[in-house]
Length: 284
Image 1: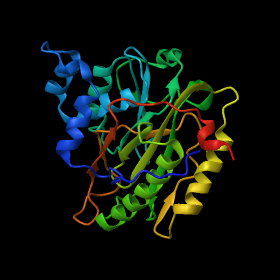
Image 2: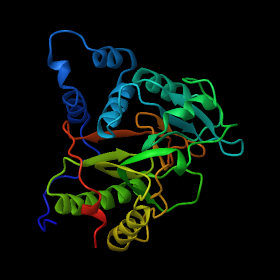
Image 3: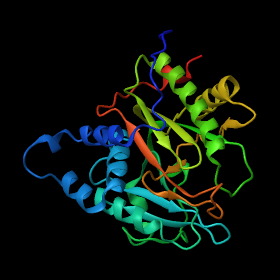
């Protein structure tokens, strides 16, 4: 592992113009004179399309790959949708934000088995009567998820001060990981609405023999080193079927107030993503 730590601003949050430029650069075909499918999606869906395109690029999602989306509805149970295309995912993210009582839209971070699309009608929201994706439904792991959240009562949004504290920890975590990895081409940065997320793009690896225990140890070590009384790094997100925010959607925990507002989520990463062996992070 490299001992050097690259100095940069941590990227949370980035200026909107820079974020837009990065998202557009992540789609090099858009530089061609002719309109592309990505052009059309951005024109139709705006900022939401930029975040979805950026996430799918980072997660190495194939164009026709099935992605499972979930809306958590406190007291009523989750709703689920299986997106079979990028446009379907964008549309479902927009529709999911309108489900009554939903606290947010989420996506399974790693690749799900395509067969689960047969659990219900694809490209539609429905109550999760046939269950949600479990670890046994994951074909391979492609990202490591570091969830950085301010400590607060369950079921409410964060204050600006609480979110700023999470951002400072996220910047420290990112600088450390950049030092381990050598640069930030493997790093994804998420604003989860109430806290921050750091992702590492790893080489796809089957779930059989998956090193969830090694990832859990990594998260525990990061929390021990960078966590504070006010901010913690969740050590329970190491399993392959873990949900992450569907970036570009709004988090709606509790009642939106001036002090604790509902906020939009967003995602940034380098235009060209470098996938690294998981062992760079988990080897002791």
